[in-house]
Image (tube, rainbow, N blue to C red; front, side, top):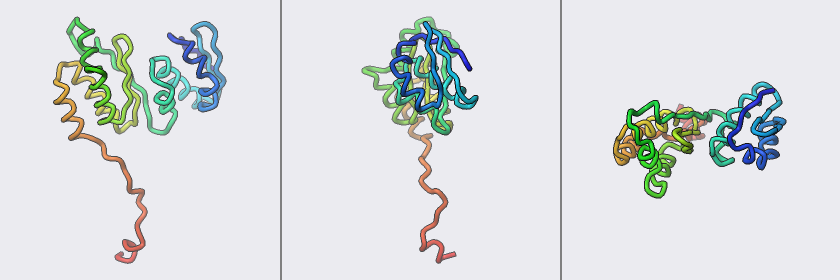
Length: 173
């Protein structure tokens, strides 16, 4: 059994039945303390999903962590800049009308969320380095267009080939 401290226990309470069903856990909420009980591997995944959900991610993005090869990481803006105007940095990450976050999401296949002076990222392990480098570049002052260009050049192509050969290919061997 693990105990977590939640900033927004009401969000978890509203989605409690869905979370219990998807994560194979028993969730208890008492004030801002959230307890999870289940198999150790389910508790570990449940802890990560609840952290992401409490961070502010929508249910659909947070539950992606329970799928294979998806991870959740948090970048603290203060650790990567000496600037004091963190409001401006947060605004640069979000972009006008949320455009920067949307483009980064499309190019990296990662979900981004900003809470206070932290940026949360959920994505597949192979896409995470691109997502992290994009956020860090914007924090350090890179132009958004340069970040987009970098992401387009270093985009991870989806793997469609499962190693199965067509009958024509087998005849040629």
